[in-house]
Image (cartoon, rainbow, N blue to C red; front, side):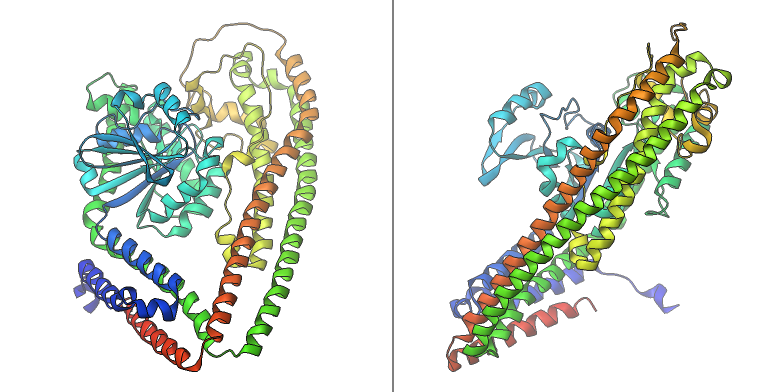
Length: 585
């Protein structure tokens, strides 16, 4: 077939786009056009020309993201085959790390373009924490290494998507916008929570990357190959609604680094499987860096060029409107803009009030639903010892209760967020595009503790499955039947037999008292975050409207001869922009 003979020359696409940009040079450099079109138009043309040309020479950018303490930095070190990014990180030492090719150096980038050079030993958590505290406005840590992988790709290591992300939201969003590919890292112990699914759906997928790779870390904690496959199936099931074709790669950064430096492997029985899995991840990245490179760079340049065309069109539309507006019409536009501002403020307040009402309704619904769940858990405690052993209760019941309650709340919060999305989409599709949430704001902390609990980190693998997806129907018995023994390492635990059931009943009863304040706080967090984004959206809309009106009024006041010159300049600019848009045909 003819389609099989068609090849794609990415370099030629970039050359065509650059040739189109070159045609804009007379407008950018001739002061006459600055006087006719305005300084803002020229500044934007210069900005986009610089950004687009620079990006064509940049290596492929891979952004690594995921929740806090999921092993993102360890994974990067394993990919690079050396310890580059600090792994003993705390919420006090977080930065956005840009890892790129160059002579070995470490720099903190401050606001205003200032930089601080660091020695390697200063990258350790304790020392770095002190340096960051004394460095006002630290936004990024740039790590350059003469590493072969970095010749082809720059890696952006983002802070965890939790409480620590609060001050880095804009930086992470900017990193995601500039990414060619995204690696999302999760823990096999907590595979793709509702919050993570929400982040992937709202913040990552809309960017339309060349590649999105889902990576599960800490797979050395899994006992057997059978459990490994089961874990992968669970992830696919959880992510199927938003990524139906997802093929997650389950790896162990610790195992790979141990193999590289010839140290004992953390799980010798799974070593061959884990090594093959990491090789699969490398193969995916090799495909991106080699076979897809001819597509990645042109795609990146095209995305930026389209953004430029859209941005400049807003400016030229305002100027063209001014060309057909007389003094009386200009005064009327100013009057209408004041009226529209009042309408927007009123519209904004209605949305804020709607969110508050939604919050109150769903908070009450959530409290009622979780109260019912607690009643069912209490009723089930009398038969616990007839179903499972005391040791199992001691080891797992705390986790079961806390995870069950948090999953219950996640479902409520997810429904609430969906309703907000629906409401906001009626207002403006642009608003919903910019609507996102820090996952830490939808995770209430329920306190529950079985006496003498002997839970350890290894027991996290108990959650490799949908352990409590149907908790109302199957409860703790299903949890034990499906996940204890089969996916857990057996551990020696102290044999004691206190009155666990009495303790459990007492704490479940006390949990009723904490449900209302816990849920009220978290729903308020969600609402506050939603309202903050809405206020920012309307503020931006108001500024754009004011600029457009001011531009129109300014042009309308020019004399007829000058207007004719402006018309010629606009026609000249539009013709070049039209030619640029045709390169995408």
